[in-house]
Amino acid sequence: MDYRTYLKKTPDENGYYGPYGGSYIPNELIPGFKEISDAYQSIAHSAQFISELRRIRREYQGRPTPVYHCERLSRKLGLAQIYLKREDLNFTGAHKLNHCMGEGLLAKYMGKKKLIAETGAGQHGVALATAAAYFGLECEIHMGETDIAKQAPNVARMKILGAKIVCVTHGRKALKEAVDSAFESYLNSYKDSIYCIGSALGPHPFPLMVRDFQMVIGEEARSQFLEMTGNLPDHVVAAVGGGSNSIGMFLPFIDDPVEIHGVEPLGRGPADGDHAASMKYGKEGILHGFKSILLQDENGDPLPVYSVASGLDYPSVGPEHAYLRSLGRVSYDCISDEEAIDAFYKLSRYEGIIPALESSHAVAYAMKLAKEIRTGSILVNLSGRGDKDVDYVIENYGYGEDHLFAE
Ligand SMILES: *Cc1c(COP(=O)(O)O)cnc(C)c1O
Image 1 (cartoon, rainbow, N blue to C red):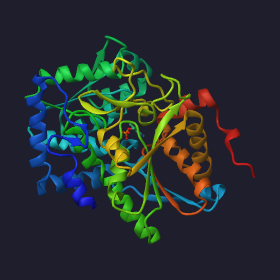
Image 2 (image 1 turned 135 degrees about the vertical axis):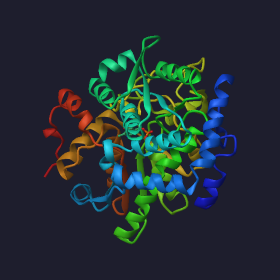
Image 3 (image 1 turned 45 degrees about the vertical axis):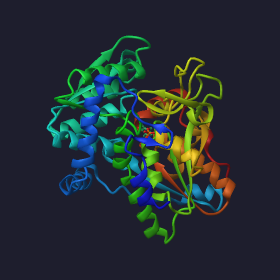
Image 4 (image 1 turned 90 degrees about the vertical axis):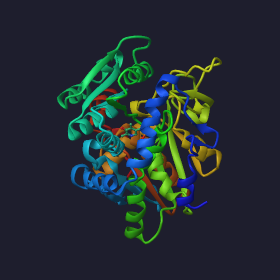
């Protein structure tokens, strides 16, 4: 199936990617989500919307982001060549602004006054608060009390940008409760507001919308790589949390003779609660309004998850990833905390690029693959920069002198 046909047919009109996806929401939420879906299908495909989004990406976000050849790191590993798509250079330091600006623009065209969302580590909250400030919209971010305490710098950023933080104090006081709280607030105000999800997941049309807004990554990277080297890469790699940066990177290569690899966090190991490797250890289930692969207990409740990279610790994965794996088109593998930390230091020391811990998982996988394949090329999506992780890393792992290659 070629790329255009795939995009036209996937998802189907009910938001299904094979058996995955769909929309499992309370009846009261149906009108709101239907309104967003209808608006997206019409407005977001108008020439005016597309050209305004292009201008925002160029003038405000700093796109296109470059593709960079890691010559020094590659030489240390063998003959295979590693390249990075530099989403860390996207404004606000990660790929998340790609879909937040799209969602904000849609809200503006729909005449909405407020953006509502949840956030875990605060990265999505900061990106959405940025979009709200840009478009002159109100912004309401729901966040668990535990996360608010852990993520002080991001909470401060959101407040400076003008967002209102709703502190969620029930249950485990974390991401899952924050989602419930954001849904409830949206339910009570959907005439004036729009809900904005943080990854390529949730009920239809969110996996589709976020994917479409993130595909700018892979579209740029594919033509930049062709121009730079005269060929397509042999391998494409990205880290998978909910699956937005990865789906955006992967799809433009779907019809090419390119091996595609998604990388999930193995955390401290394979025991329940020590990782967030949904594809490896999960099975079919429903969470947050969509069907996908889910880490669950015997009652179908989501298991607790962990990763050193807080942007990757989600117990499920966007439905299109589950589908692409079932087609055999994308393979999924894991990287441990330890391997990710090693890649964090090595990319810093040998290329002068401090990566986000999430992105370090993709870099670690590429380094392993480079040793294995010995020749060929690997294009990695470097989803974000590591400034946010520096304090945590030095406190727990030091400055990395013991992570140098042997001379
Ligand atoms: C949030 C985040 C991720 C994980 O989210 P996806 O939706 O899987 O892309 C990865 N990298 C960075 C830098 C992030 O901020």
